Length: 461
Image 1 (cartoon, rainbow, N blue to C red):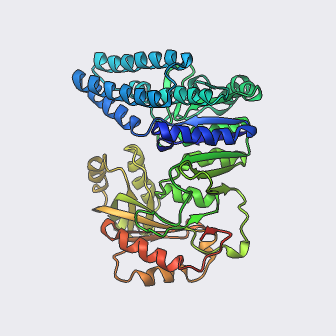
Image 2 (image 1 turned 30 degrees about the vertical axis):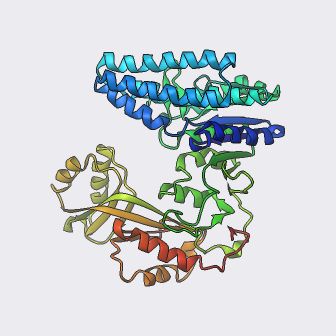
Image 3 (image 1 turned 60 degrees about the vertical axis):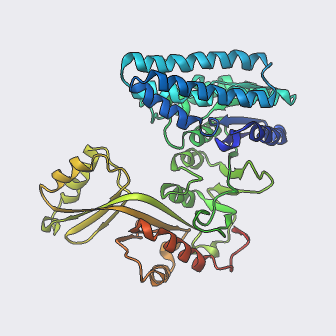
């Protein structure tokens, strides 16, 4: 049994859906369970719709509802599945649910996280009914199974946490028998429900997270994540045209890359794979013959090859906060006082660097900065710099490899580096630069560390 998750671009058109139906059919003997995202672009429209509804803008909301329905209508017509009775019934129900979700927001005059979840989850609802109809048109037995009947979460709407054991019991009871009978179940990614049946969403990376959660509950050995790239690359291809595909990665490497901005992955989906020891394979639905990137606990790579840079990621749009105070010197409790303010205002910190009287940190969410800074200034001098970026080099054993920092910073003598972090991780060396320097820094580092002398067991060259 395998779990296959398809992202928005993979289900973004009738042609794309035909293509993934062929991919699913090719995995039929492996008893696939399919998890789908919303049609590409639909979630953004639903987010905009929620804002118009929250502002009471009925005419703009109605116009967006019409766009969303027509987009799905065109795909259904192109796939020639409009006569499928199950789809027709579900589609009518979905349209009614969409109108109802908008009406509740407008009538209440307020957009709460709960109402937001009920609305933005509709994209996955439509896709998870269209895809089985397309599979049935190919002669495959397939049905939609509502994730809300399987994935039980807490009540943290828009960023819900799954209740694993309760959900696993439902999956074993309701989903597993369908697979064993030869059906191909199609489920919504990103979506769950509270114990009392209210719709929740899992936040960023939610569809991938759903796939790995279901994989863990079903006890699979592989979860396939299908997107529009050939796998995890050595750098962002928008900055480095000759970026290479990485054949194998460890979970730790992938998690570091995901946290520091690699767009193929989000950190949360890797946790169930780590806990339950199955592989995650990143594949391209537009190029299904490619082997992609396999992420596992024990990638088949020669240990002697540890210590080389595997990939370069970056995270932009950051703010650097530097706190200077002589009270730090030989004092206990100072750092706790600083971090408690960020906790108080629910602001996550990415990277921290300290000296005797200075601590520098980066954040990517500056919404509460106007509240944090005055409180920090009550006991320290504070400097704030915007438009910064973290560059992160990842590879197993980098910390234990001599000369890596010298090589990096020797290449960047003309670049202002605001802070550096290494020792906290065996596999990560990170530093902060101006956003404007990103193209120069990434291309220069990639040209040096990936100069053609690459091991074909690790990289597709």
